[in-house]
Amino acid sequence: MKLNKKYCALIDSDSGYDNQLLADCCENIADEFAIGFAEWSSFYRDKNRNSKLDMLHAKSKYDESYTTKELLEIYKKEKENGIRTGI
Image 1 (tube, rainbow, N blue to C red):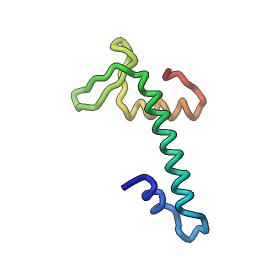
Image 2 (cartoon, one colour):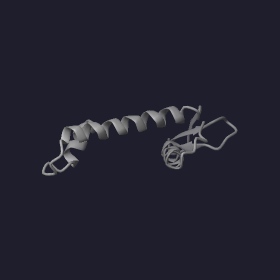
Image 3 (spheres, rainbow, N blue to C red):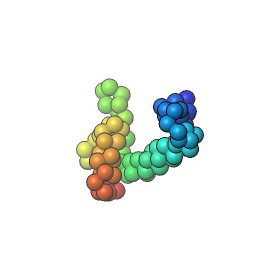
Image 4 (cartoon, one colour):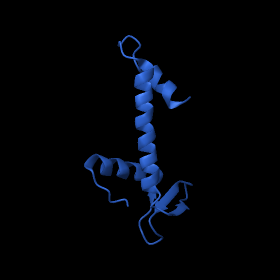
């Protein structure tokens, strides 16, 4: 299911709002966030897998490694605080 359809399903049809317009706006926000995260995480160039087969990312083989989920949480905190330390 596409994000747009998921958003439409979540929006109350009795709200009086244009559900498709709201879903389009939500989809654009999610797209911008995903693109921002992808660009930000590309600076973690060293990729490996741990024993659980989770993808691990590090800036170099000498830096600490993070799972994709951990990187996402770091990105969210930095974005929320206006910090750009990932680059």
